[in-house]
Image (cartoon, rainbow, N blue to C red):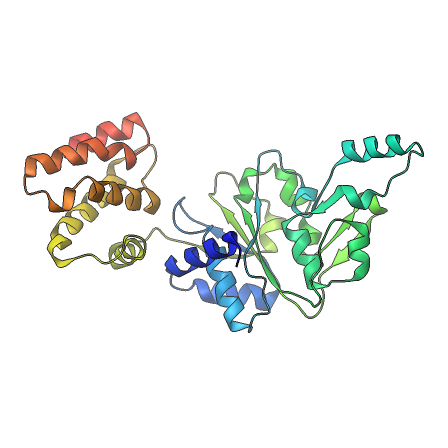
Length: 309
């Protein structure tokens, strides 16, 4: 088992699935549509892909690839980047070194997340002749994560409409040779968005949609316990007070609301600093003040939180 696979498995084991999300996953797969996830940062959009891989792997009897195929969207991302990259400079240099001016472009074309998923679902020998890809000996299903798709230029989502609807793409540098999903494998595409900008209507029509609400109450406590372990009875009151303080923080801060990742890290730091065994209320307040910067991330919000103590 590779390090990335083990990390993915551990992430999946700690994930608590929001109500209704499993239906959204299965519905998206049944309809052959990507699943678009929205929600605040820290609500588990990205880590859903790890859970989905292990859920579908078990459900299918090992027919799914063992880890998500990830694409981290950037502000400079182009539509082709989702499927493959082409090293034009190295190709040009190799062609000139050989003197003939010709070099096989396949050595300079590398499949990326969505492209790998399509190739693995339909492992034709000629695919390996057109690009860099180590193909399985049978069709493999997979989960593709396109993280923060709203970061990309607007043309990115407009330019992949056909590809996300039909699960196929063409390699321009190989005379537009087309790779397409095979009939005996599935591809679940999960796209995340922080709703920083509106996505085109034509793109949204091709997607299933699910909004992850920020966890509260028992759901939030369950998530925390998955990450930090059992909450001992003697620390129960202290944890309840900190959960309440966290809830107040989210109500009052104005710049960036703290997410579950900040809460978990903050609680761990307080534990390392002896907060849960400290008897002095003055010392406990001091520890809270010293660690507030790990809960909120701007000076304005820090001042707000100090006033709440």
